Image (cartoon, rainbow, N blue to C red; front, side, top):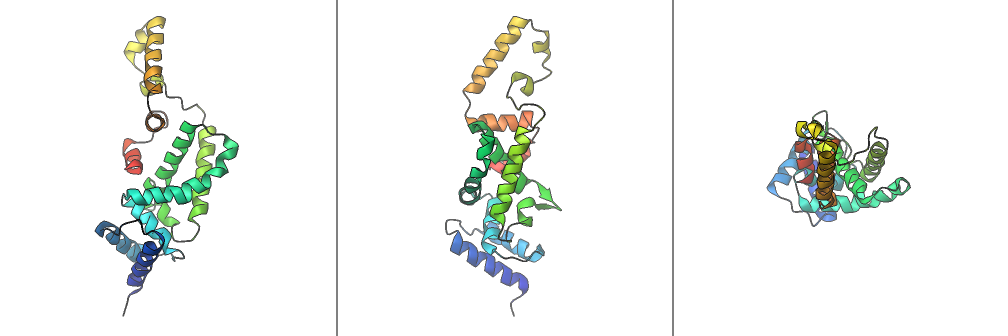
Length: 204
């Protein structure tokens, strides 16, 4: 007789293969599904959401692309009133990834508290808007400046005004040559104080 955990595994795998054929069912993903089916007490309404979320957590690039296309991109019209610039939008997306896939609640990634309930799109939209509001309501502007990278640089502090101005100009020129993604990652780490491990986990 098939156990309830085995039935959940079968349902998640079947729905995932049906709805997300571009995501390979690797041994790691299969093990993650089995662990989730054995430990999660949540009733599953939409098992395909669980398949996608677990694939993202197991570092499937294809799964993350599909997640962003289905959920992030479709939710972004909700940000129209905030008039975010390209770099700000990149940062909001990155913060959403960190919030859902890196941060945990009760020892479980946040997304697994919601995936499978049939409301993942609504969750992503709420988190996306919330992060945009947080970005805009920050007490200080998240400017990528030399002071943000090294606010207590003793050499810069002792330099005369002309040398300080030249150092800042050189930094601004270097920052301008970075891609929007590179500026976003630097700003998250140095200005927003997001750990390097959290950033790496959400961009792997």
